[in-house]
Length: 62
Image (cartoon, rainbow, N blue to C red; front, side):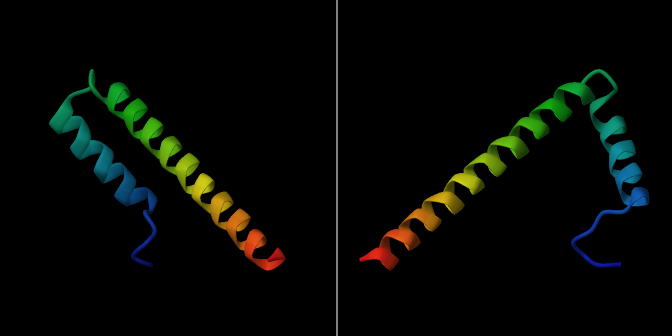
């Protein structure tokens, strides 16, 4: 098993620990926050990638 991958067992363990620490009422709120953070990160990463492509294309034409 690689270090960059989370399997089903690890995911269940993480969720169980989160349930014990935060309680069942906070988990949906935490999930939404994490989802928003991941979405924003991906959006910014795509923007940076597009900016780099535009800069690279501009340099090729000059």
